[in-house]
Length: 348
Ligand SMILES: [Fe+2]
Ligand SMILES: [Fe+2]
Image (cartoon, rainbow, N blue to C red; front, side, top):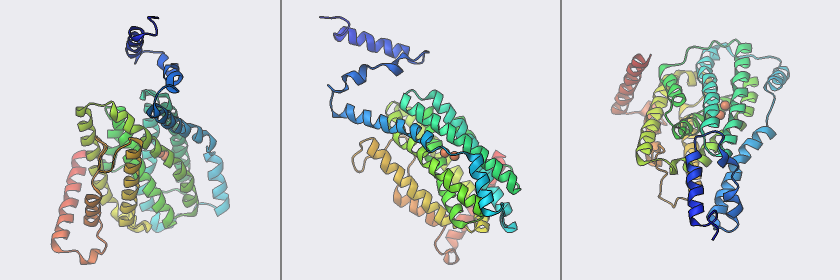
């Protein structure tokens, strides 16, 4: 028996491969062992290979669909005869886009961190593509905001904490979950609602470009997070759940503070929350498909209110008919707003 290919040889090889993890160069990245034998193995291996190809495709799609931010912005300004933000919407636009602009910078940094930290080549490629996109989003929005003269206020303490928590997240799984599933989801909902509100024509058109890229970033989380979670311990998943819940609550708190600005921009806050909720449901559904979960099974470690709980939260925060709210409902919202202000003072 050939020792190198027999059971002893295979166990030595896999031990060597394990020992090499974390060392440079990571020779296992070009190890053809798994692929060479994949034809002999079962359907699940082939399915895993197909998932990997889809993930890698995100990177190739990034390069295929890359757009030149400078040229696009210039052409949109020419098309619409300049940037004209209505005076009564300038302040609200500033409060919205200070979050979006610094969120783009955070996403750029997180994607670059993930490109380095993620162990699998397919996910590394997808994160690299995202870093490339986010860099473009940051500079094109910075240029737009400078040209428009919209004043950018400092970030609110709660949303600042959301972004710094994700930037400093203790693990790639937490970074991926916080950025791809929570922040990107909210960004997608905000882009769509602000674009639909047609606040300013150049911005409306520009957001369409950015929105197309963001869908790929969410896809990285959806396709890869289940795989990453499979490798985490129960304790890590519990920490991740707590982290995700905390960041979600912070975004809810910041959302309360954004209420007057959404009104000024003509964005329906309930519509925005419902849009984000639908996106979240869609992501959870897709993640379960990726993880081959049966109906009723959930992805452990990922924050997730049930559909009913989510709907109840939206009805509480953004009632369909605010004028007919009961006294208890009003008192509950007033208590929440007081808590949000107190939290802002603590975090400021
Ligand atoms: Fe972005
Ligand atoms: Fe993004």
